[in-house]
Image 1: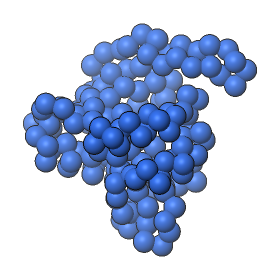
Image 2: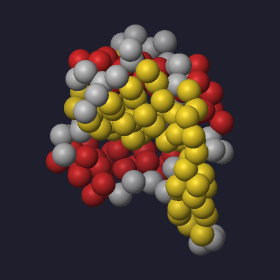
Image 3: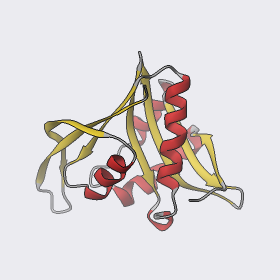
Image 4: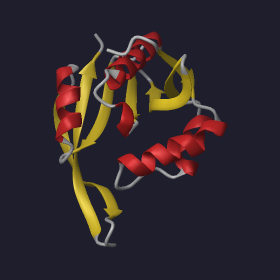
Length: 157
């Protein structure tokens, strides 16, 4: 595990860097406007970096509601994967959810994202259902893609 990770709030000035990582990691990356909307709505928007470098290594967006949290995204820069960053970020988000009296954390994950599904299951998330055609985007050839999402939940109580 990477113990020297520092978590800070994402600021508007960070969004170009976050968007660049998004482009590398997702077939349907969030636009900067969506990220800005999360900041404006005062969601939990965190970036992870180290004392040695201001480079964003990971980031996350989570919405806190009445007695529950919705984890919208955890992303680790491809060059910094397999170092415990996602686990550290999830731990931080879990603490934030508890502080805000959430009883559960919900998320959706692509059915094809086996690595993320394994990660969340190891962390204690359980599959609670499926959302048909939840993800819709165009691939690199312009073909329309529809993909189901698994709905997963972690109980904080």
